[in-house]
Image 1 (cartoon, rainbow, N blue to C red):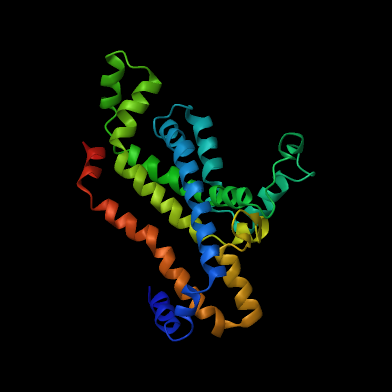
Image 2 (spheres, rainbow, N blue to C red):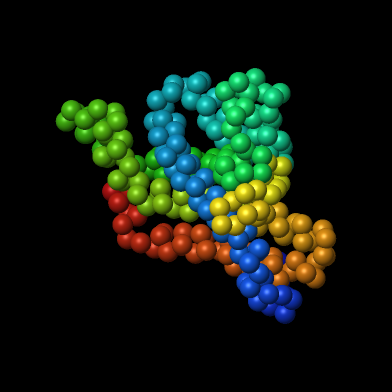
Length: 251
């Protein structure tokens, strides 16, 4: 926390207000937050049932272990490598190219969102899986005994009891995606042809470009401004944690 406090304090006198008035910077923050938010939403849609299957052992012992290792692998892979892997997956060198070759990922908003999803979704799966371990499985067994199928039990029993953890995990994943740099520097350094915005650099890429071209004195104010924006999901996370309805997941 001390380095961040130093950065924020120094940025006040070194262009913090200038950054907030720079249209290029504000556009970069906008596309970063939108892409990260979509990635977090996709993680919630795909990650919640995945976490449930892993937490309840629905995939079996060995298969479940392998699937969990694959899903959580991006946590340990350097994110520059993750970006290269994602880029290669959609390239002519990939065995999946006949299926994915027409998908535009390089320097596109789709590529940005996919990169965010690839590196941040493991945080969602891990967080929800941990919350599921605290959810009494007897609630699910009771629903099944009353005739509810697996899908209905998941939708009407599990998900409502995980409202708090799902929202918290979404915000945590959103915050992690916003801070990403390594993978998007490879896949989406520039975003080309965005409606109403034209060509935009994601925020982390813009800060790196300014640091390389203009030096620390110029990028300092922009770094402080982006830090303030990046705190928004974390502040929302603390607000959600304080809500009384999150206790429903512990009932």
